[in-house]
Figure 1 (cartoon, rainbow, N blue to C red):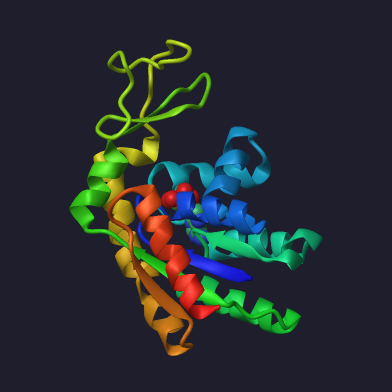
Figure 2: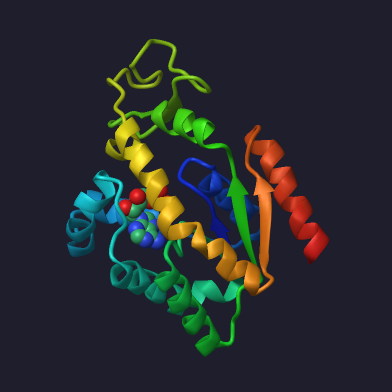
Length: 216
Ligand code: AMP
């Protein structure tokens, strides 16, 4: 099966994509993860993307389309995948449609996750991570035992540059302007399903499985 997961930053689509990919042995392809890894390895792609990611802006369409084209032409994608965080603009969505038409492998479903904006801001700005062992915490939902220190290695926790409140608000504005129009694009193709992304991870996953069960 071939899926696209859509939704604003902080909605939890990456977590849901990971869970579905593990359950159904699909490949999870996240452009955010690919770009962040490139930044930390200081590859040419990473150097190109770094400033955009840190300031919450979108990386240029040609760059991310190139990344996806490479992944989808590999043999692993034959068994199905979940695209997480791509496409994010109409240009990317059109390029993806063309790519898949050429391979005669159309998308089966696009899932849009939805959560009220105030909740997204709370989720994103409360996130903290350990720069040494990479563990993730949340000030409200999964706080460290000692304020601002990693439970496991004791390192001082940091906030991701793009999780700062001002940057989060910018990312949400960009989502509304650039990505929300994709809902109409996929609705017109009759492959869109909307899911309430509030509540626990397990609750949302149950809703997702129900939608897929009703369809396939
Ligand atoms: P994410 O982890 O999906 O929120 O992505 C983190 C950042 O990577 C975004 O704020 C963008 O700067 C960049 N990015 C990820 N996916 C895309 C995409 N499809 N198009 C443009 N930029 C992207």
